[in-house]
Image (cartoon, rainbow, N blue to C red):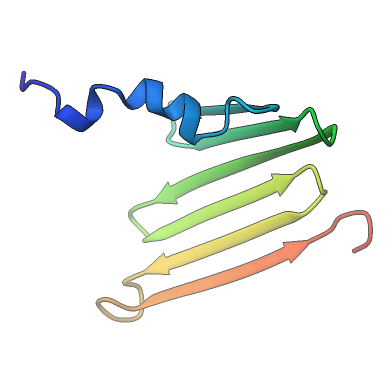
Length: 107
């Protein structure tokens, strides 16, 4: 095993200051992956000065045999975003992206 890089030695400590964990902001960032390859990313943030709480859920699923990637994002502002990407399906190096957003309570 190679020794860690010098910049990586204080990474956890520097994340406390760089990611806003101090100064009246609390953050939570959780990432996980299921057995069938679905990636989940949950982000939460609370600002004690403004009493505003924000959260989002991101789901990503890749189907490599068809070159498809499905990405869904839903946040506490009730905004749902969906992105479907097809890589190398029509021609080598050609990428097609379908991007849509929806606010479910207003349509």
